[in-house]
Length: 296
Image 1: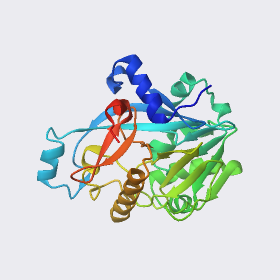
Image 2 (image 1 turned 60 degrees about the vertical axis):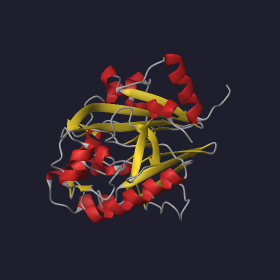
Image 3 (image 1 turned 30 degrees about the horizontal axis):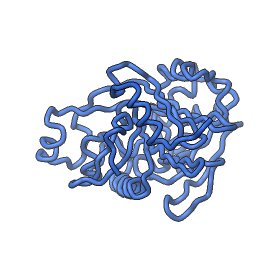
Image 4 (image 1 turned 90 degrees about the vertical axis):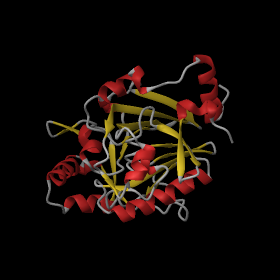
């Protein structure tokens, strides 16, 4: 089978369908090929969020970018099929995770690896049902600083995280995320775990590379795209360390834009994938279903 670049494949798809894919079509999965890796959005729902979580967003910024006071958001996990592995990046709430996987002919026992960006409940909820492991054959990867944070925090979230860690203890792998620009060490073949600290102390992004094509799953680097693209200096109340989260966001946005790397995020509206471009203020996000409009 002849291989095409991501951009060309998406352009061909847009030309033949003649329409833009939108979350209103009620589609919960979206797949495209990056080299030999098939990457699928597993959507657990779309919603409109308010501005109360934004830190230091001035009335002027809010009026300019979200005049209605609401912006689109989502909750996503991602499936990555490589030539030899079936990988899940996060597990969402678990509400429709298994239905989404079924759409891609993946059953829980076929998942080989689970990579966690961090351990908030909307990322680990699908790992246990009735406190029992839902992915019996999967190896679970958690960044060491993320593991240590949740093992030592006295909260409901900490209790949930510790239950996951205990349940998967025989298949648990702890690792040190790498620096985005200065360390090319792979966690798995074709996959780098990249430090994106701030949202949580061990928050991790995953940079995928296959056949000279790259793709970045950035976890919770953003929560409010409408604001945080033009103003990446604006953090959210969910961030454990807002200042560190801002530093990570600026660094990763700059890197992705400079290297033309498509990105995906857990709180980006469906299909949750796109391209970063510089704008008059900060950056703009070009939805992957709008790729036909993308100009080099």
